[in-house]
Length: 323
Image (cartoon, rainbow, N blue to C red; front, side, top):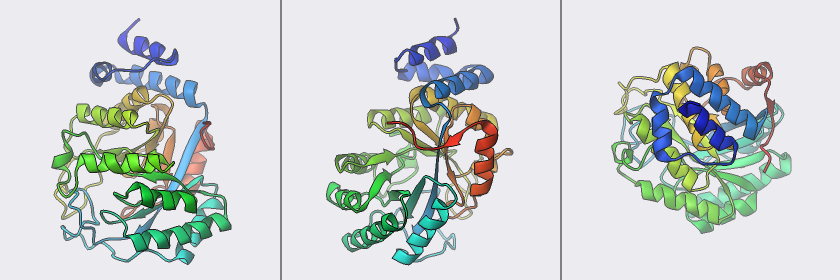
């Protein structure tokens, strides 16, 4: 029995992969690795496919200097700028997605954190959304404290999103206006408020595969089950504008290793999926079982209709994971 089979068998029997074992998969045969990851995904998650969409709820003028981001005020990217969207606009977006079979609707807001008044305004909008339709609501609202997350939970939010972005080691190369520990504090605050958490990162910032593994191991330690996998789409006039994009082979290995680390989670293809020739289709047989559909914050994505068609072709059913 080779290393991949040993690790797979251990996971199927309820075991957990170590950091050293995950690192050993970096050089494992890709075909065998992806097939094993797909088998692990089938064992733990069946045909469940978790589909969500995002809306750019507040855009631009962000105080943070994340080197990949079009919305940072530190870079001349000509990003569209506007304050928190109105309740009417957010409800309209929720209804549009719900009627197309989308499970989750995430309101993503630029900035280090929402102000207290913005949190209160967003709570009003979320109550209106939940009154209009039963779609699950997620928020990406920065480095809030437990009290603010509790307000959002009470208003009807189910999940908070806050990407770790990369490993603790590499994070200072990505952003210096907040820290990796700030991220962890916000994630723990959301969990303390009773929210689920979605947290992953961006591949292609200049990090190593070991950095990617360490990021997901941190997410596992935090109890995170939804891991967004973003592939860097280099934005002109940002510090990472000349970074190379990941190949399909690199992306497949990332997804497969992440599945080994969190066997029962949602490995979620997110931004940059459209850079792949097959729009990420092969990755859904390499361990991925979730996606952000529709447009991203400042870049084009894959349409909901196309994603629904792809799910049917691959034998997936769009539904919530069993808890």
